[in-house]
Length: 165
Image 1 (cartoon, rainbow, N blue to C red):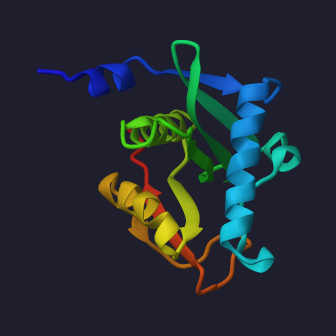
Image 2: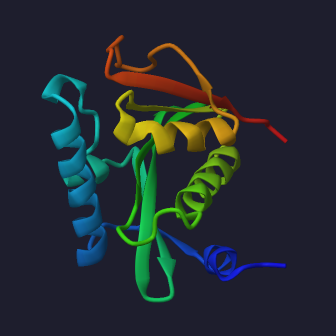
């Protein structure tokens, strides 16, 4: 039996987003502002709208009907490794599986693109506990800093090897 919450998530539409829409820009601006409030500048790694427009980054928005419910991005670090960025669920839609659906989409795209692994950085503060649980539930494991990151007591790093099949 499927409940209404699951049915709504099953119907999410994932869209490669050009960041021209006011809704997605507002969601990403809110994400960036919350990350800046939660972490000192040297520990805040959220990408602003300019950085999200880099050709190495692809952003997807998640829609339920006409409602923007979340977003996420992949940043290519090299041809075999990408970083998950800008995972965000819109206010009023948390706890409904939106983040899990967006994450599953990013993992599937990573496999389609031929990446050997996906990695991410998130905070160690309580605010980020739901995100850490999400990543662990989807098979990510803790790892050392990657790319240009360095050890930081406010950062936790995760990676997921991707199958080539």
